Length: 356
Image 1: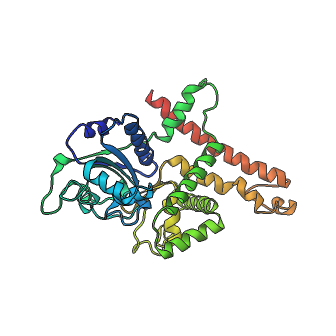
Image 2 (image 1 turned 45 degrees about the horizontal axis):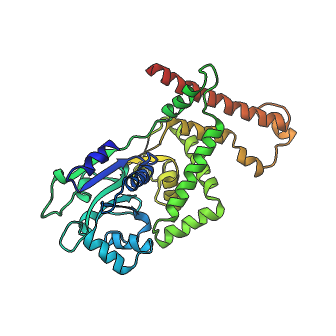
Image 3 (image 1 turned 30 degrees about the horizontal axis):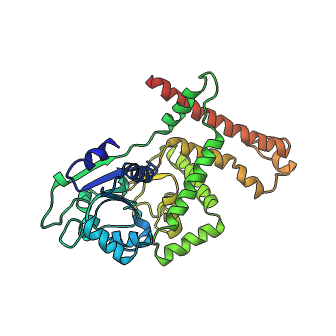
């Protein structure tokens, strides 16, 4: 918040907020809007939050489009544009599939345009080397230069830090508050949020059809299945090395293609899952989620409603599990899952104490 407050007290026009998927950019933007409204006094600059994916063609007249969504009349919009100043809080530049400079295309602070400054957020992996051209005020012929532009990167708490916070609340002799249930809830919440975000985007007809098919089949379960299969493939093909480098031409026939090709459904699932892309490299936002996917492949509680319990003969013939009843078979799978989770927790706690 300090960087934004510095921006607001300056004469700069655009503040770019960068961060990985899930870093908290949208939450920060909402908090900023709330903070500005709490301190608002009559005649102050008006904070206006704009969810870019929800605006049709935000490169043109996006302020008026946003105000219409808030049920302002045309005379009211005209009055505001003529006599008031705005701080625009634009969220989800990458999700709106933009390539244009919204400050320039909306003619902000130009003759006949709105008097406004802009805070705009974008995922880091969406941008190329020359990304500043998309955000700096001015145009190619008359740039306002870096003095009118500021940027910052938002860094989320790491999974270890989150575990550390839970660990420090309780007695350190007890078990850390990172559990199967925590990961289950985290993944399900992440996928549901991804589904909501995708549903608000202006998808092309083909992508919209694929998205609706995934919903009909169970969007969250499809996302979890994708996560499980990808995690197992990474362990099998890369010995657990978490970063996957994918080239569409080089890897077209490799094990990577089913996960990272350009099929509509795969692209949707990649965007909804807790993955980060940097150029042609892909990885989970934290290694523990990769390990979590492997444990689900060993034993997923949700699958119990979708499969029959194995017969005694099947279990007795299984060389990897050994003989026993169906209940014992399930218990052994659960024990395997518990052991992997214990290793995960031990690794995280070791990292925590290594820094103390």
